[in-house]
Length: 247
Image 1: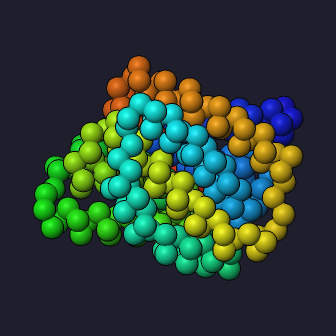
Image 2 (image 1 turned 90 degrees about the horizontal axis):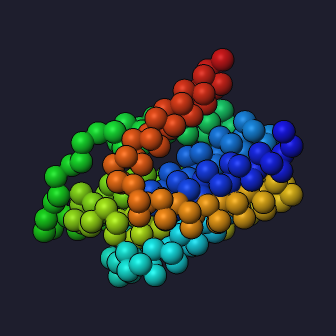
Image 3 (image 1 turned 90 degrees about the vertical axis):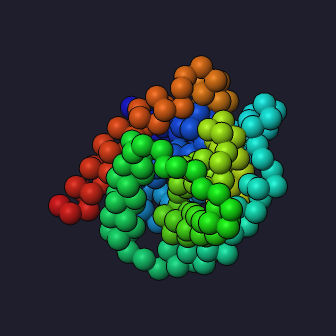
């Protein structure tokens, strides 16, 4: 199977995840770029930020048209993570590939566990505001360091901490992911080697198209069903990457 076909298939899956779940696409984008398409871990995480940022913007437009984006709160949540995203993005280019791969595997396993765990009770008042700021900063740091959009963290935080509905959390998380992805991308440009755009461009295009289908899929299926299916896939990815790192 050629690299182009693999890129198109992987991109479509990433887009479906982002459009349907409001996150999680980059958890598949990075391993697909590394294991299927031959990118180095550093280049893969940089390319992932381009792919996820562009795809999230597309998904954001789809959800905004359906009235599922809470712009003001989402912007404040994203703003808390922008400095951390930029700083972690600059740091990541100096870390060894094996460390990035291992950290990514652990994060994928934690994300799967979080998706399978029962929903946390909603918080109120000052605790909600403080937790939201901390979650936003943490999300930005993860985005910058590992090249992931962080929607798998943003959606639960928006639901449990800020009392969003699942539909609002999915739509608003795409605003947060877009902002963090581009903030993390800037310090990486020119520092991780050339991205193979003959592969990355069709990957991005397929992901953008997949995001629209993901939004339609989210309209038809229960959010919990989508989360469980994606969590199982993440566990497989985590096992593969951790095994590769240790062997």
